[in-house]
Image (tube, rainbow, N blue to C red; front, top):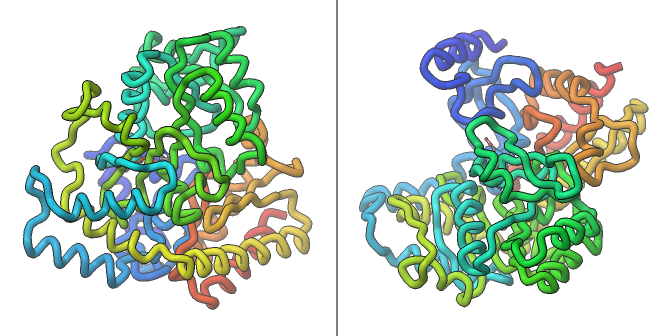
Length: 427
Ligand code: KE4
């Protein structure tokens, strides 16, 4: 069934670290060799062994309309005929910036970069430059890309000073990142009090998607907004995952909380490499060449990626989000019915078209500690069952499904039917 993928993985491992260009793709979390895909169309993915899958990952979020959707492909073709990058200003960059300003409540000015990591790295440098303070607060279980300041785990001891969470991250870098507990405003206030006047920013996934999906308690985000004003630090919403995915204006529209800086990625590039960060003009004008905080990029805002991204953003209207909600709700309800009927210890967290099924005895998963108590072995077996039945899920318990508008009723019925068989296989 996977013969060619297994061989391909042996070959790729000879010339690419771990055989992949991003660790999660190696399927280590689910204990099997990765599948190599060769094409996608709509809701389907096809691997190099000729197996067909219904895709529930959408390349980790970017593909709202499924694979190689007509409008995005023609936008890319139209642009590439004329040229892909000039390293100089183009009108399309202004057009997509105006679209983002119109869609995201807190953004008056936005800078394009080439990945979510670049967006978050740049956002904290801007926050530090703007506030002239040095420390940042992040949350255990939140992922903001692979920038040194984010690969930090909670230290022990009262000051909750960060410790490197990867070799290569220096102790000095780690010391400038403080760790708080998601959905626990008091843990944030404690850190702020211990480091009074030196915290530049709080960065948070307003809906967490990197410990599996964890929703913010109803006062959490508003509480962070209040604390950042009280302690004069900036509030950064990392909406790389949620931006344009959960609503036109992202999580900040859903929860009606305006951050100082928003980071974006994934959907914004329509499948091409794009990141962005934006906020008020007052803050963003601190960036070079207008202001003193330096950040640059050869391919930032390149017309090819901008055309792909704009072709998607233009279609993110209420009808699109209604379809995403309808598709996702149907799958959610079907899975809950199956969990009940198979008497499986599992819960589901969902916001819009982002969803995680957690294998846990608990009634809820509200933070990183809860997520760590999940049965990852069970998830691995579940993942492999679903894969063998032609349903492609995220290869880790700590990731989310991302549904697309291209899922048909037959796809949904098959996903639900396969889920029930896979849950029964765990017995
Ligand atoms: P990229 O550098 O991968 O474009 O974005 C980093 C990033 C930043 N912020 C959030 C909230 C993110 O979820 C991400 C990246 N998400 C992962 C999926 N959990 C990308 C998949 C991967 O690492 O291969």
